[in-house]
Image (cartoon, rainbow over all chains, first blue to last red; front, side, top):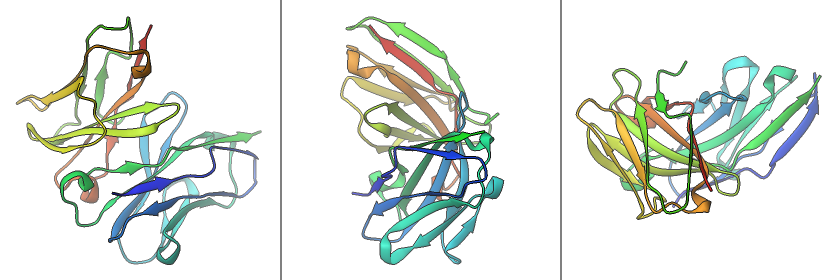
Length: 117
Length: 115
């Protein structure tokens, strides 16, 4: 079974600080990786995704993530955060060759990011 | 606006009761997913339907059931409610190919409080 770990439960940064949120997954096969963001009072929305190719993926709002296969990691980064980045961030994974329950996304427990003005 | 509609937004009920949560997927999306978000468990996949048929099952309790109707809307039925069922329940939809080729679009969720 696949699982996702987000070790940082709550991260507090000042504006303009750099951000890196950790995400590690466990799955023996080829995976698809996602980062979703949930702004306060809003629905979850896709930030970026990795299917194949360049392991450095760029998403919306200046976010990027790097897939490091050897480390089973897909960390989210942003060089300079803004107050508006305050949100909860979820890493998710599913099998690239899904069958049965692997079809669905498995989410991490989420990381709450608070950016202080 | 994700295009996924969930009703009601809030639901307060007592233990032992039964509730129904409703989800209308984004226009054209055939897949509907239900997730439970609680403080201690995070975002947990419950069940997926594709074009009316159950496609995948996650950590869904036997007291919970779901269905997807011919018009593609879905309902999640929660019965014999317990305090621990208090959570935010999200519905998401995706197009053909599931989350691989088509990202999930989430609704705003239904906040269930069991007292």
